Length: 157
Image (cartoon, rainbow, N blue to C red):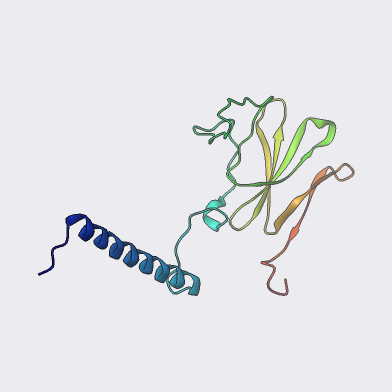
């Protein structure tokens, strides 16, 4: 019988465990890459991150996030916080209101917000996806104009 100290046995056991975990991780990565075991990554960039209905913007949030510099930042003026990404902002006639275009699950929303009271005055919806900074105000027709993509971009629509 061969005598082996506990430290050698522990080192060998840790090495074998490390190899087993490495092989298991590589197998899971290959399965994820091949699509056989798709891992749910969360709502970022997916339909779950987009609101299903147009909800009015709020003035503040409970947890504004982490500022990397650990400095307290207080924005000037009034804030409007939306449920999804804002794709375009434009001033209305006479500068008394702004229009903000956001993305929803099945529609794009254009909010009209009063700048003096920070209240939502109107919301328009469309089935097209808004383009980046694709919002402008037409002073002749007195309406916001939104450029975007109709359909899903894969078909003939």
